[in-house]
Amino acid sequence: MKKTNVKELLASTNYDQEIKLMGWVRTKRTSKNVAFVALNDGSTINNIQLVFDATEFPEKELAKVTTGAAISVNGILKESVGAGQSSEITVKTLEVLGEADPDEYPLQPKRHSLEFLREIAHLRFRTNTFGAIFRIRHHMIFAIHNFFNDKGFFNIHTPIITASDAEGAGEMFRVSTLDPENPPRNEEGKIDYKKDFFGRETSLTVSGQLEAELGALALSNVYTFGPTFRAENSNTSRHLAEFWMIEPEMAFYDIHDNMDLAEEMLKYLIKYALDNCYDDLLFLEQRLENEEKNMPVEKRTDMKLIEKLHFVLDNDFVRISYTEAIDILRNSKPNKKKKFQYPVNDWGVDLQSEHERYLVEKHFQKPVILTDYPSEIKAFYMKQNEDGKTVRAMDVLFPQIGEIIGGSQREENLEKLRNRMKEMEIPEKEMFWYIDSRRFGSVPHSGYGLGFERLMLFITGMGNIRDVIPFPRTPQNAEF
Ligand code: ATP
Ligand code: MN
Image (cartoon, rainbow, N blue to C red; front, side, top):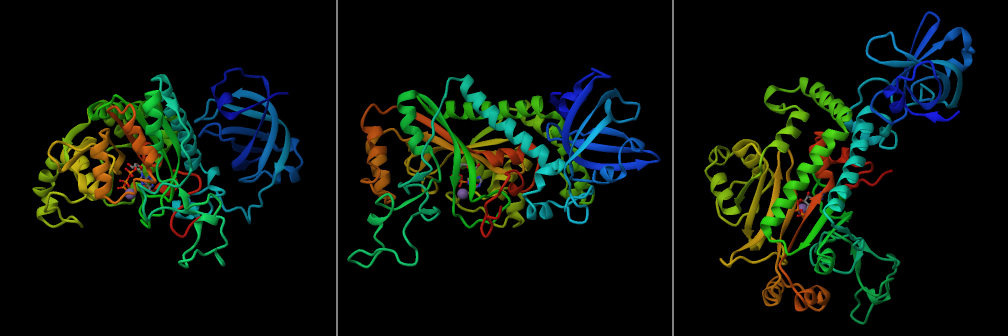
């Protein structure tokens, strides 16, 4: 008999049919001669109820059906008489595929803390919470490719190992096959990277942007969606050392086109989640509510998860300049009352996440796109404005997260780009390929980077980025 899955069965009204099903036991409860088992196979957040007539199964076999055990059953799909489920299965045959010793198995049917589950990340897939998160994660990956494919963008794989450190000076992970105990030295006594695998120093990429730009200047609209690595020692709830980034690059786009695309994309992704992940979102919303019950009122979120997603979907993002934002922040209550950890006084300071969140959550109560940042705090490739002190950058700021997207119109003018690189001491020689893109057939173009796990934080309402990626990499942590 062909095996089916829980999702299909719960949607089916083909009662009295024989079916075959495999999955993992979530709970078992026995009353008189009947055992009720909640079975889950990951196809959906919901379990299906299995009903065993205990007199028909050897006691020893039924005893092996414990939380976490894997079983295979044949049975009959029945319309359920009990409350809370539409159908259930009357089990005819049972095979225990893999036992899970209840004295050893760490996941018992009770609430476990997220911190505890991080310590057993190899098993946390089996909880409702992480099942929901990783199903949503899949749907979001799929939706991203859908969005760009429907728009005629081409997906480009940019390199993971790179020799360019233009963007990530000091934050890159070295890639080397040299013997760290005994590296070859040159005449000056320095490590001789000419003898290394690639004949030069190489690292893991911090962004695929520069290479994606090369693609855009021929294919017009491209995007990368790959892993990025940053050895930044920021142990926050929003930073990972290994994360995934979506980076579209578009020829003939100015910064306004760029903002339009970013807003349209984020709304498309939110709508996709609401349309395709509703059960999982509802579960996460309820989980969040339970969690917040024990918190002081002022710490609770104002909106329920699904309401918040609709709210962002239904409202235009606010678009203002960095200079306007600084004015707002300077005159804000928390700034005057010295409540910000980093006070805002002078034009030119970089914005911290507390400032970004103030603008979004308190001042505008909408997502905000900030543009025209001081060139001093932004990368060399951003298009310089006429005023000589700002660049055409755009950061998209979201509630609860702060920066979710960072992007800009790119500097297409060869001389301006060269001058900026000189000022910032970026070696032209190593970047000849990037400079060539402005020497030959240069056009106005734009792009941005969306941190995939930041998006996941927003969609799932989770508070810590370690909980929206299966195997988080953070300082001092690369287990599993
Ligand atoms: P932040 O100021 O939050 O560190 P950034 O300015 O370093 O961000 P960019 O270099 O613009 O970020 O990268 C583009 C996007 O990648 C960011 O908007 C964010 O969504 C995401 N991102 C950046 N660093 C990380 C990280 N360490 N972990 C997860 N996502 C990240
Ligand atoms: Mn950063």
